[in-house]
Length: 261
Length: 86
Image (cartoon, rainbow over all chains, first blue to last red; front, top):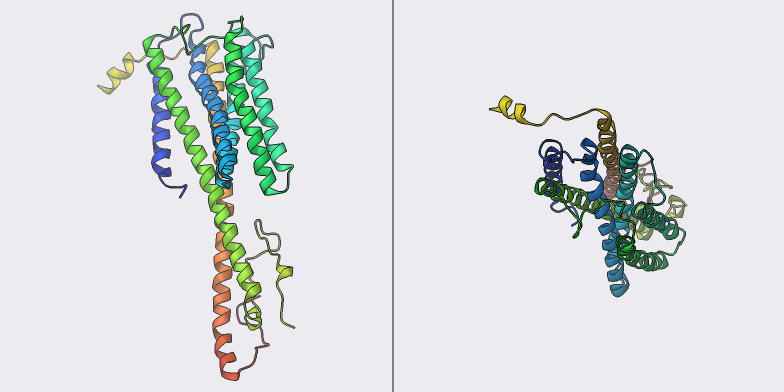
């Protein structure tokens, strides 16, 4: 179900990334002040935008989970936040590299955009420890959804607060203060689409893997329960070699299977 | 046409800024690569588990068939281990 269209999406992503990087290096003009260093902008800013959108997407999925009680929405929310966290690592590292090349420092603490993004990242970094510290699956999903909604609401608020702040040191890309030339703007939009496709592809891969693993666990449970509920004679030497006691997802352990006397 | 088009493309000024730009793009690429590698490991684990499960089912089915025949004939529960089962 989740794997449908994955191949087409993967090829589209690779093609979009190739086109985007070709435009970055061979089409977009050099920026007057920063020169070649400004090329980092085309990877850093789309990554940041998609990361923040991913966090909000996770919050929307969490709302759907709380409304319906369907565990699939919780899984979608979890995967969206998980992917966004990975992208956020990329944003922080590429941003630091750009800061070092541009300002001479790896990190500038009085820059609101940088610090606010770090706060959002650290906030979401607590999502997984919180989630996996709860053993009961239903409570885990409910608490994680509440966290995802609260943190997701914080993301646009934080974004607006930074834009309303007086310090405009960080370059503005979107909005009235944006002064990107047409060629740069076009390249940026293509890069944004390519990164969005990358996010969608990785999200779909993760969902497919999780769904397949869940199906495999269900199948294993069925096989093991068939063995335990079958007539006694069918247990005769039916210890399946593939069903290891410590197999992941195996609910019934081999020791639980009754053997004939 | 190809070489003339390439000649018109702007040269990449890989001086001082080049290393920073290269580092940023390499970092982004490496993050994706690491993630895809982790996915590949997970996929191979799923494949292995599925193979084990299928093998277990095959061995169970193979072990049950002869037992059923014997037990039907004698009307007793078998006590000998089935062939091909550990």
